[in-house]
Length: 251
Image (tube, rainbow, N blue to C red; front, side, top):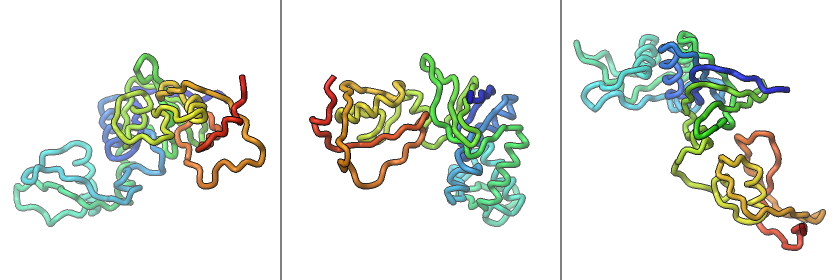
């Protein structure tokens, strides 16, 4: 089945507080916007993560931050769903620092706000890989119950929380790299074969690729396999810590 193609002005990847704010802001400015979220609700750590509190909006004395976050808190407060100190003194602007929120009411409010802004929201949809040409993101692939889809847009906003889209598009980043990371040099013939299965733009560094034939009945590993998130096309990968040279198939 041919993957479905979507075309918009802006695609926001990740429906946490930053993703919601980006999507609503773009839509209010007149853009056609899609917001892609891997779970079943918006809000990220404030809802799914059960950390229902926003960071300070003030410099300790005055409220200095406004925008979508401020609007969310004010609307929740009007519904009795934001845990604030008693009403401020006359002419005092509430600072809204470390405001406790009702996570379930926050889910409902964020749904209302994206609908009001006419943002197209897709839940239970995982962004798997960007489409990159000449250093520019032209689209992103997603996987869901609707199968494989591609989203094309003029602008992409990475609000995944770990910069997944940016990293896979080749943007520089800092962070710990595991021995099985596609960004790491191969550690042996099998590791090179595994890296070869990944996309070149992910930093494929395979040099010495060989084919091996493991004798039937050989126990090569006992334990748990790591999850394979974000790979297109499926395929099983097995790490063999020690390869017997006799297993290598001669060319």
